[in-house]
Amino acid sequence: MNVLGIETSCDETSAAIVRDGREVRSNIVSSQIELHRAHGGVVPELAARAQLTAIMPVVEEALTQAAMTLDDVDAIAVTQGPGLAGSLLVGANFAKTLAYARRIPLVGVNHLEAHLSANWLALPEDEPEALPEFPMLALLVSGGHTELMLMTGHGRYRHLGRTLDDAAGEAFDKGARLLGLGYPGGPAIQKTAASGRSDAFALPRAWLGEPTISAFPD
Image: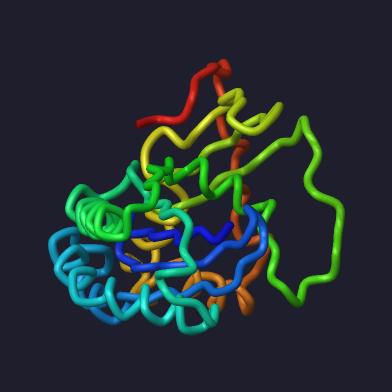
């Protein structure tokens, strides 16, 4: 089975072809770093507008690199949330229209759960290796989300904790902007830190509080 995956939860526009649930035949990502650099962070309306023009070429390139056409696609998977409302609408509406026109199944995917499931994907050239085994501890760091999860099976999670305010990526972006290091903040801080002192500050241990049990946020 060949599944066309479409991802537009934030500023990037992505499409991939996955065969039989694991083999990644192609993976195309259109970045918007230059578009948002002047603002020091993602501007939701600008992101959605750019995705309107990027999504068709990205999907076409994914099919080309996989040496496939739409006739070879058996189903379409698309991010349904969480994410930026406008960006999600671009991907969802495109996927719905394509699935309807081609008369193939459409599957809505939770953005955060997809990050965890990506650990079971492999490229054709990858050496065979053992799949992750349950139970497993998963650290999810994605855009506006930093989550610590205990996975006991596919679709079975125990939520151990999350950041109270900004996620890690947002904190890096804001910190880099205050320091005048540029955008995106993560790579800029990492590059600058390579020449810094690890003993310059004594940082306290983070307060974790009592763990809670929950599913993924909508």
